[in-house]
Image (cartoon, rainbow, N blue to C red; front, side, top):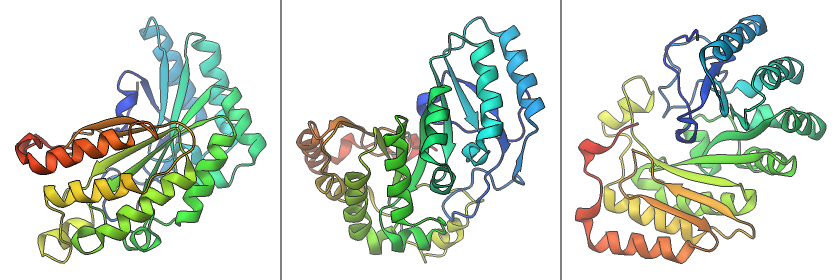
Amino acid sequence: MRYEGSVYRPPSEAYSLIVQVTIGCSHNKCTFCSMYKEKQFRVRKVEEVLEDLQWARKAYRRIDRIFLADGDALVLTNEKLMVILDEINRLFPECQRVGIYSRAGDILRKSPEELIQLRNAGLKIFYIGAESGSDKVLKDVNKGETAADLIDAVRRTEEAGIAASVTFISGLAGADGWEEHAVETGKMISAMEPSYASLLTLMSEPLAPIYDDIQNGKFKLLSPVQVLDETALLIENINVSKKCVFRSNHASNYLSLKGDLPYDKQGMLNQIAYARKNLKILKPEYFRAL
């Protein structure tokens, strides 16, 4: 496989074949993100992608899942995506699922019929970084999308029969805005009703624009206890009518939480309350990582 620069994928795609169909992120302006800052965004030639897939067929005996990278590969037109998906179906009849990163705008630009076409071709999960349900926070971090955009995009995804895996970031509003961030994020998840919702905890690297604000004290990170309080308030405000798999078990999280909403809501709140009284069970800083 030919890879350019650092390659990222969701935790659930750990055993997937990763294929770059774009290089970098078309937005690449989020203040908290350092993932693609060293790359200039471009779309790879479809012929190159097909060559990589053909090489992988010769190299691997069985491939059950394929992930299309980089940052928002769904920016491609359906015409280009279908050429790639058709080749995947031809070469890897055993492949059970194709996944892809997407921004809300990528989804909203596609018609319901186009989304269904992608689903029928095997594209079964979209990974969407919503980050926060608060329009103020989204503006502050230069997300380039509104809460309404994100909710609409996830609803359209689920209505097309594609699973939406939506990621949020604990601590993204800092010590001054955590309550609004928590409440509005809980409300957003309730309105979206995604198949999966996951919560990371803010960590920053030098390439991320927010890093300097953290270093000079302009942006105040949450303490581990504040992260617990924010997470509890967020979960309290989630009210979904269908199953939503909730995970807060990323390497960046202080406390690992796993449950299916709405069924395990109180159980997770109980875990947080226990951790609040027994802080020694929280992950030490030196074990946290992006």
